[in-house]
Image (tube, rainbow, N blue to C red):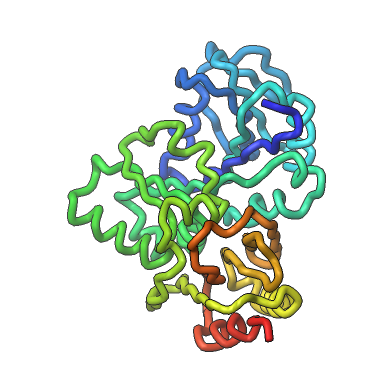
Length: 322
């Protein structure tokens, strides 16, 4: 890996008992030929066998397959800074959040801290879901719902404990909250490591290459607490208008807006602009030219609570250049 390449970071989340640690142990112990730095928050009981751990100091363990494992007892930014000093030694970083956590603050770290932002890129938020107990969790826990809403990839685990009908109902509920994440079914968190890591799923560009219709579906209104909606305009966007509108929107509605993603055609710009936000923290960058023959449409997706469709539509359409 070249020193100037950004290191992909996977945020691994999921409710207590869903199977996150099982998935982590797979990544840390299987012979997949890649080396990862794994950051576990202080509630994470890794349960890794001692003979798998070499060179254990207070915070960083090196695994026999070359993966590095850390426990966060302080600041994620500080741990990441320490890992950057070893940056030639691993292919990616995995951050496990506590099962009761909303993944937003972890994701926001990768937008907010300039040093972290320069060295790393958020690759994907992966949520492990317990197929047997999810419906009950959604009734009593807003965190379980938020973990699904934030996800780029959802591992639907414990498939051996549910019937096909039950699985279909669980998937329907997941899709009602987040129609955009990729779903993978699993038993004992057995998914190929490469399907979890290096997905570039936080990049809309990659998603649109895989699924050209990703942002076009506009009918995702549900009675559930978390909903999603998308809008598109075919005329170029005025960058100043968009920044003013989205800035105000995130300031006023940021608590309710869990994830925002967009691909924008700015007036006078040859390159596509990828925009994304987690709650109030936004980030964006140009991601290369429009493909020849592709319609230059601007598209935006919101996943959140208490979303006002007509208001969002009017706001986005109001960003069109004169």
